[in-house]
Amino acid sequence: MNGKRNIVTGLFVMALFMAYGFLLIYLRDFAPGKEAWIENYIKGSHFESRLAHVHGNLFALLNIVIGYLLLQFKDRLSNTKIISWLAVAGILMPVGILMEVYLSFPPVFVLIGAIAMVLSVLILAGAFYKMK
Image 1 (tube, rainbow, N blue to C red):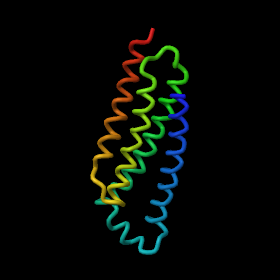
Image 2: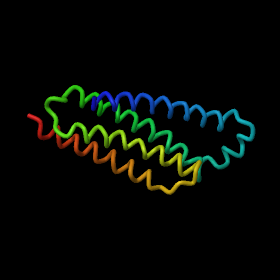
Image 3: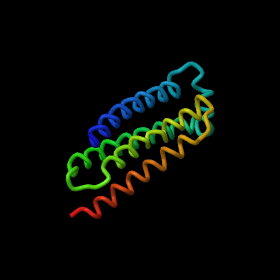
Image 4: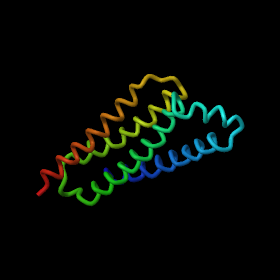
């Protein structure tokens, strides 16, 4: 279940952030008032929106890869449950960026997600290092 959770989460999150990317393209190229959007393209919430899109897809892909590795090496790796849940919690980073942009939330979810993903990757690296 540990790897499957990450693959399913990763695929769903990737689909959502891909759709969000299409929204960003629409706002930049086709929406009424696109000139104002383009004028603010490199600053503020527009920049953060693009960061969320990129990191959302990156963290989704990381979840897919981590899930695959957990499934392939489940009998030989340690700490698979914590690795899996930390990677899923990493999705809080790009979601936290969107919560900052659209809901004025503090960046605490961004930090929690970033730390969770880094820990997941570090613990997975350590588990592979120890693997016989």
